[in-house]
Image (cartoon, rainbow, N blue to C red; front, side, top):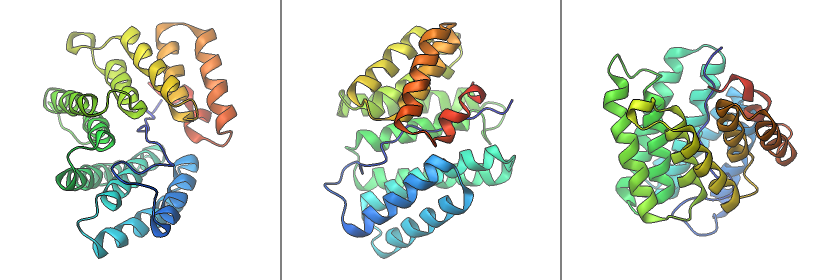
Length: 236
């Protein structure tokens, strides 16, 4: 089965910004629709929206960060439909966008965590034969930066959890550490359906079916339409 991966992000907040201005809030609503459905059309609309905002104000951190989030979800929508080249392009675009955001504000834990997730995704999409050796350390470095900036950020702990979950054991992979980080993420943000999905995946990898089912049911309670939750059995 295809590896089905989504990056943890909090849909209702924009890292490094205060309450979203009306224009930004409208875009976040588009993103929420796209991230829940993984609908290519809805994600394309969200991407166009934030790309336009970023073009109008090229030094706006929130616009570039939001654009990177949209592009990250586009990666997964393309993967679902076996559009490998489109997924590779979207991934490279997402990395470029969040790097631009970090160049504007390098004190955002959210942005560093997103970049860590994107580097992690490079190990399976378009990264080449030595992708693990090249992008694994980069992902680890970004997660360490994020944790140093904001040790109580749920997105930071979720990203760390995925790092432990997907890394080979010889490179620091540890399912128990993954579970610990993802549990902390759900405790810090009990409204994030995605964090509960990832916790379910980690429990399933450990072989704890009961705990995995419980976490997945909580994800579906929070967001019954979540394609991530509905396709949780495809996540590896």
